[in-house]
Amino acid sequence: MGKITFYEDRGFQGRRYECSGDQPDLQPHLSRCGSVRVDSGCWMLYERPDFQGAQHLVRRGDYPDPQQWLGPSDGVRSCRLIPQSSSHRIRLYEREDCRGQMVETSEDCSSLQDRLPFREVLSLGVLEGCWVLYELPGYRGRQHLLRPGDCRRCQDWGAASARVGSLRRATDSP
Picture (cartoon, helix red, strand yellow):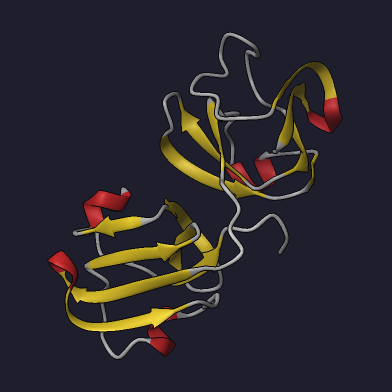
């Protein structure tokens, strides 16, 4: 179970909306998102309804001013509770359709360029748990939630290119 509360204003002020599961459209409940409190669980927040647009991972804690991590936008329009897993495994491939050289890991990696024997990740397979793939090293840049299954090309996980910088297990603790 998870619990997340959205507030219309910064500093946990104004109208609020609490949810404990996936919410494809927050607009009927709040006009904007000014702050977020995560009581439990690990969540992916999306800038558009129906789990579309830029993604932002949040874990247990307080986020009094989302502009610090969202930028100049109040664009949280949907959210998804990330199922927790006791184990995580992922395979990264240099070619589409899960072909070519492969690296398997069960640990976070702050710099994939330092870890991989190939330059680009063109496909991947999530074997266990959920992962967050970041466009830049150091867990920065655009984020993509990866769920169990194969992504045969980078467009399958929502990326426009094969640019990947870091990878982190989606857990409710850092």
